[in-house]
Image 1: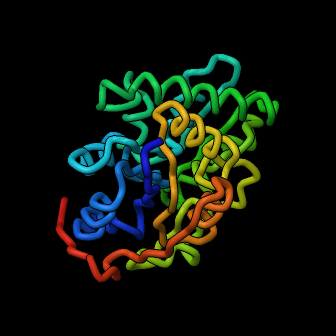
Image 2: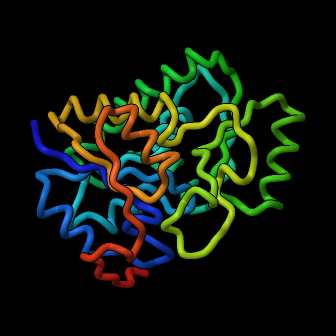
Length: 241
């Protein structure tokens, strides 16, 4: 089993176009492998992969699960998210990394089918981070057409302590009954199966949000270490875009 750290993205190593390279390099030096977990629904999964390519290829986001649901014929889905995320969701590949793209596809489909079977939903309207105006239009469509709302995550800005400035997150937009984020059974199923396939043994989660990162740590029976973007003694901040 490979000694592995799970590392959160937003508010931990990333914030508004900047990345904490010092913290990333420190964690990389102490663990054989890193799994990057992100609830981000405004930056596409592939962009996150490209940002972290020199350091980590194991990237797991709820976007994988949304993409799998969109490719499942047993359920109808409509999506409300940023254009760059929608472009990824409509693309062919799950990952830029050839060696893991089929694994991500297969286990995302497996986890998503579990969600569909357990929830018994037939029509879902999946919501990422969007403007209030765009959300209101989507909510109206879903209510009129009997689509059940599903959040890509349920993160709230008040709980994300590493974010430098407050802005509405997905959990601030609506009180979702269902979600596909880090606190969901569907996501936890994905990460467990992924770790088992690649013989990874997570020991700790580094993150800024106790409600999501801490919950995930508890679910995986590993430790949680609170880390805020730019506040580590190892922090070295660089601009990436």
